[in-house]
Structures are given as structure tokens and as C-alpha cells.
Length: 266
Image (cartoon, rainbow, N blue to C red; front, side, top):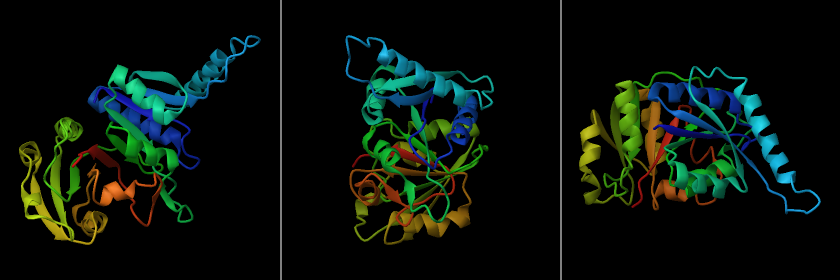
């Protein structure tokens, strides 16, 4: 994961400085570059104000650089990246040219008065982009990843290179991965057949019967005490339904540790 993208200013509650510092610490371990992004809306061009959009771009760069000045860069390459237009469209367009490997987002506040785990823009990015996403809890400080809990319903992973991010994390941190297979009401016998690359990663396996994947995760989090939770956002099933309306309520899903969302289309 050499190119890591961190959008700023997409949530009122997420603390972008802590998230940016986490991204820097994470990138340092992987030898990556961090693109610090802020979108700006281009105004309709006017003959009397030909430089207005350049001014808006410059303001965005200044805002990004002010954020960068507040963190310890630790020798990691940070690139201020103002993106023109809607963030949900600008990031995929940028990805086509620069091959972003990971987006790091912040979860909403852990205050009990805040009902959402992900807000509208963050939830939309997870739902609509093909880029893997790492979601960091508020004020979460980076630490070495030793144990990973991967929660799945089916062992079928058809999307090419879907496992590449978790493979790199396991290799970089010399981590172990425990696979939790949650058998819900629509579980099929063929779901027990694991894709070869997935089977090769697993250090241990356990199955659980629950109404939803989230319930299975909650049941086993304390037992496993992982440093990272990994799931697949499939087109169908619990995680497909979870992001249907973009925003994600805490009552439907929440993670107090970093959550890696991989693309594993059915």
C-alpha cells in the first residue's frame, strides 16, 4: 500500500489531526506516501474574475498545509492534494490516474449522543469507491498490528486482488489472522468452501451462528482482542444492506478498533 489517501473536513465530529497522524504512522511502517485531500467547489468562470478558482485551490492547499504543520511527519512523504468538485467523484477520478491503495477515514465521535458510526460522506465513500477503506475510531493512536480478526459469511471472494491489503499488513507487521465465519439464516453449504488465497492466510478458524455478521463480531471481539477488524463489503448480505443509505448508525454497526473494509463482490 504505497499510496494512501486521507480526506479532510468530511465530518464535523471526526478529529482529522489524529486520523492524519495515524495515517502517517501507518504509512511509515509500509513505506507509503500520504495524499492529504480537501475538495473545493469550482465556481462558474467569469471574465471579470479569471483567477477565482485558482484562489479557491490555493486556499485549499493552505488549509491542508496548516493541518500537516500540526503533525509529526516522521519522514513520510505528505502531498497536499486539493481536489476540484464533489469528493465522491473526484477521488475515483484521481484513483484512475494515481492508483490509490487505501483510503483512511475517521469514525464519528464515540460520544453516546452521536448516533452515527459513519456520516453521509464517509459512508458514501465506503459504499461507492472500489478502493479499500480503513476506518479509525476517534482519537485512536497507532499501534503495531499483531492480531487481526477477519469476519466473513462466505469463503468465496471473487474480486481480483481483494486480499492484497490484508496480505501486506500481515507481512509488514508479522501479524496473525483469525477467521471468524458467521453462519446466518441464509448460510449455504458452499459458503464453507474457501478461496485458496484466503485459506493460505488463516492462522486459526472459528465459526459462529448469529442473526447478523455484526452480532457474531460482537460476540467474539473480547475473546480475540484483535488490533484490527477486517470485513468484506459485498453486494449482498449484511454489509451490502448496511451501506444502502450511506450513513451507518451505531446500533447497526460500530467498531472501537480500526476497521479494514475490503471489496469482495459476490
